[in-house]
Amino acid sequence: MDASRLFARHVAGTGFDDLPAAAVEAVKTFALDSFGVAAAGSRGPFTAEWRRVLAGPPAEARVWATTDMLPAPAAAALNAYQLHNSEYDCVHEGAVVHTMAVLFPAALAFAEREGGVSGRRLADAVAVGADIAAGLGLASKAGLRFFRPATAGTFGGTAACAKLAGLDEETVAHAFGIALGQVSGTMQAHGEGSPLLGMQVGFGARNAIAAVDMARAGLPGPQGSIEGEHGYLELIEGEHDIRPILAELGRVWRIAETAHKPWPSGRATHGVVEALLALRAEHGIAASDVADVLLLVTPLVEQLVGREVRGELAVNQARLSVRWTTARILLGSDLGHEDFTPDALADRASQEFAGRVRVETDGNPDPNALAPVAVEIALRDGRRLTRRVEDVPGGPARPLTREQHLAKFRDNWAWAGLDPQAGERLIDLVDRL
Image (cartoon, rainbow, N blue to C red; front, side, top):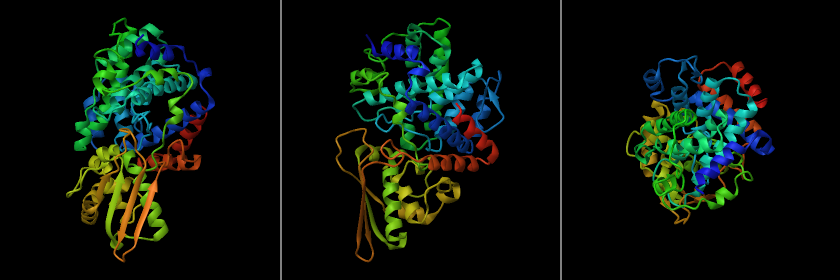
């Protein structure tokens, strides 16, 4: 039996009462986190332009952080872009999948269009969607060939919307087949730092709703969508082993394995960010004290954020550059939204310092490993400082406290210029989901 059918059985057969408390709390945590990040993302590049492209009737679902209403697939697309365009949304590190980026905007737009969806039903849909999206990423034994948050995320979004639609196992399997025909997401956008990167997440959210709408209307999809000769795993991932993932369905909940992002940059920068902030705090170093910086990172970190800095970067390039984040921290920043504004990106001192940072790989054999990483700083007075990070902050081994989680949400809400009291009401609403 193809994995698509077993995934479909998990989606159709899982109810809210099957979810452990940790999974429910994780859904609430990352729902609020997503709302805050997407609010900040409403100020992101090309958001207004894409909103104008998507505008039109019927008014089915809200664009987050605005009063605009769009057709549900269009709202899902724009909200997903807002959620991902600041590189601040949560991620399943082992899967290299931004867990909520596709599925949450798709599920919420679908629910808003359907009407009458309870918090319990939404939580159930998010949990099973996370299992599918992260499960596909965990099944991969190869490095990234396509942009997995969009490709695997499309299946997660399809699962979440199928759950909300109440589809039976067979119809869910058809929806997965239809989703396969719409999967997209190129790493070229990542390599170039193109805003299309986040838009690809939006395409996944839009296509997830379309897949469920089509399956619900009786349109069939191929049944080998996951393990078939030209199914997802062979087509998109290459080397893979999904059997251990299937064996854990209903026992291991991937939403509870999801990591917060403490800083608005690529997750692959965060081990280095943690090390640099610790060294700066401990030794009081400044950029003028530094003769040389070496970052020793995994092959995946080098692939994702090892880009060199030669002059001014586009904002997406800067968020995905560990050299840029290194420069900003050693020049005194704590790394926030302000480090990716046009003024910051034009800063010559940051550009020049980032251009001197060296990045080397450590030969880690795991193609999906984000840690460990190490930082070595040679000071002009002859001292050498080192710091190694085994577990990146924000992950299951080092989760954010509730206070840190709420501080992140409030900071994002404020960055968007939204009413603080509305933000507090949203916190309360999500707590009572």
